[in-house]
Amino acid sequence: MKIGVIGAGRLGLTFALLCEKAGYDVIVSDKREDYVYNLNHNVCNTNEPFIQQMLFGAQRFSATTDNIEIIKTPILFSHLLQLLQQLTEIMIRVPCSKLLMISSKLQN
Image 1 (cartoon, rainbow, N blue to C red):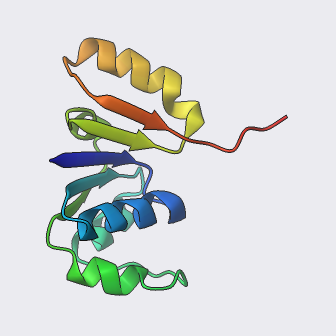
Image 2 (cartoon, rainbow, N blue to C red):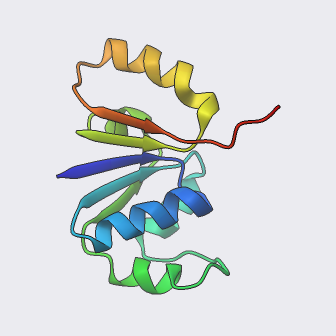
């Protein structure tokens, strides 16, 4: 099964790599083209423990700047709450049937 993750920052990338390690095909999206290029070449400059090692060993992991590609996956995850409205609008236009998971720290 393929999982899509919108947002490949610290939380998104860690989540995606853990899913990949568990045996899922994972694709992440991020708006930074150079960052996506590096991820696709198994490079990530981070001080998060084990991320570079997990990325280097990833067999079923890819990155893109195209959120439409992510939305077409059966399971979609985003921790970016502000994307909810944008995702909903896109999902109306792109036929899909999926589980949408969004988590975010609520702010007062």
